[in-house]
Length: 160
Image (cartoon, rainbow, N blue to C red; front, side, top):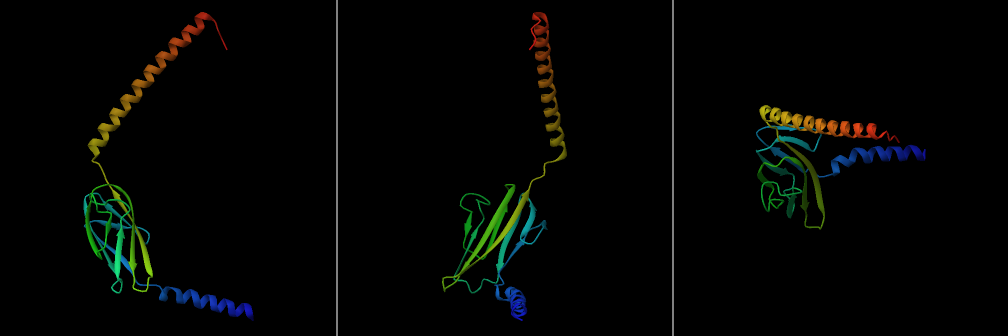
């Protein structure tokens, strides 16, 4: 009977847990945005993104930490509930939002933003051709050197 009560208490706690936690949500607005798993978004480089938080109206103060300067010098941190940035640098941005309350408690929400940069097809082809010629040239030089040393070893008749 004791095990049954423990299971009921555990199930009750699990169902009660989501309703006890805060309703703070991070919302992103951009011209072209693709959402991945919860807490992840994908955008193209050069997009203007607005970060908005809801549910933090009772917070004494808030702090955004974008992990690095997101759109220029001194843009890593912000203490506004709505922040807009034009993001040019590709990469991963681990964004942390913290809401501080009067009773010295705080809530943290994390969001990951992936910024992608696509180069046009023509530049890609040019770069691939240059890489091909560089590799082919180095292989020709290496095979000439190897042939020369093979010939020298055969002349001397020195084998390892």
